[in-house]
Image 1 (tube, rainbow, N blue to C red):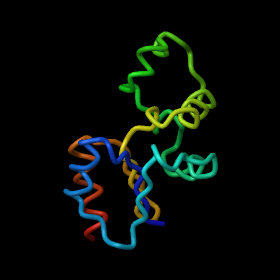
Image 2 (image 1 turned 180 degrees about the vertical axis):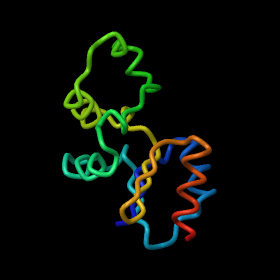
Image 3 (image 1 turned 135 degrees about the vertical axis):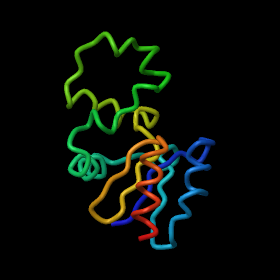
Length: 117
């Protein structure tokens, strides 16, 4: 599978998409207009290891709800991601059996290398 979960209104996601220049066989899913399904999240978790690895602790709602002071389980992370798209660390790039999560330079470079062979 070749898929990228992103947010079309996010400048960082736009920059990364432009930088990695995914081929036409990639499916782009704007998570704001097309919500992540439970099945899609489970597929991501299989590659990522845990839901927490997919979770953005920089999301505004994370701070607003004071979630850092709560003891969250992996199931809590899953439910939060399914509840609101901002909890997914973006972008999530799946290239065959590899997953690249987030926007750090190291992650983006690794994704670029995997995509461009």
